[in-house]
Structure formats: C-alpha cells, structure tokens
Length: 264
Picture (cartoon, one colour):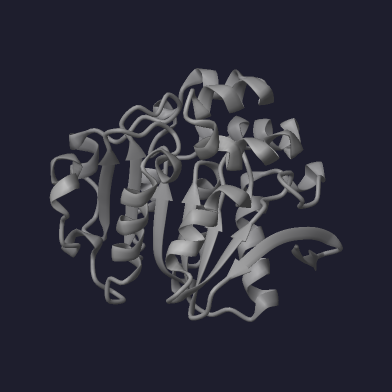
C-alpha cells in the first residue's frame, strides 16, 4: 500500500511499471482496485498510478474534501508532490468528471484525457443515479456480471463514504462538460457503454458539435464499466490512445475492424 499526506489528509494510491506517467481515477462505485488489469496492460511502457479519491477506498474520509473542485484539486496536489510534469489521465464516472475539471483548469499539464462514462450534460445523468443508496448503487451499476469480473469493484465499494457519493452527484446538474471542451486542445477520448443505465452516451448531433480534438467510442456490449465488461477490447483501445503521437487528434486513431461500427 502506498500513501502520501496532502494537507495532513491521507491519500492512498498504487503504482506499477516504468515510463511516462498515467493517472487512473475510479467512479462512484469501487476504488483504485478495478484498474489493475488496465495498469498491467500498460505498465510495460508507462508508469501507472491508480488513486482513491477523497471519501473512497483507503483515502481520507473528510466531508470538506467531497466537492468536485476538491476532487479535481487532488490531482493537482498529487502531481505537485510527486514531481510530475505532463501526464495522461484516465477517469471513469466521478473520476472522469474530476479529470475533466482538472484538464480545463490546467491543460498544459495533461497530454491526453480518456473520459469513461462521463456525462456531457446534466440531462444525460439518470435520476436514479442521484437518488440511489450506496448499496443499491453498487448492484445497479455493476449489474449481474460474472463475480470474477465485478469483484474488484465490489470489494472496496463498502469503504466509500455515502456522503462523498452524494456530494459529487448533487453538484453535477450545475456543470456542462460540453462547454469545457471549447478552448482546450488537449486530445480527449470519450468512452461510453451502450447499455450504461446511469450515463447516456452523446447523440450523433451532440458529438458533431465537439471540437476536432475529441473522439468518441461506444462499446456495444458494455454497461457502466466498459473496462470490466469488455476488458480486452478496452485495453487495446487504451494502448492505441496512449501511443498516439503527442498533439495528434484521437480521430486519427486507426480503427479496429471489431469496433468500427460503434465509433461515432
């Protein structure tokens, strides 16, 4: 277990591999743990870090840290303390929201951003997501997938402070992530599961309005957790995105035959 103190608050993270840094951030259910397969898949060429956000996993449980701004600020403070320069960010759900906010504020620090199950507008978030209790949220978002696939997310789900979940969801309606993409030229890859019960994937007309540096892939056999539901496919897409030359648009990614039909 690795941990650092940020303003006297414990932040837990795990690290694997060598090379350029990638930071992984979990969503409203689970912790750093469900990123292990993705970390293993990329650790030969990158130094991968997976963090527990405030209120989740083994990081500090302190209500003053639960705002979206504080979760995004965690990224800046972690990078400063670890002496990091430009990084790649991979965020899911809440982690995607935090990574998007950080990228908006510090585009010079982010080489590329993969945002998974991230709403572009408040209306794309299910009302049930905002009102579900912690235990109900876990079962709903993970569905009835094989236990060996979902166990990594379920294991640490009970560690989450329910107030950390609700504090972030309460603030979502005031954000418009579509607006955050304008004026920021960081390459962004949006990933959604076609069967996600909580976050609606952008429609064709919404995607068409996004700037050139943004690309979307929809996984047609996935729900809220594409990295678990279609792990091999997800990890190949992640590798292609990470190996894209710095500054190139994700729309230049060579499409794999198996996902051509699902790329918008």
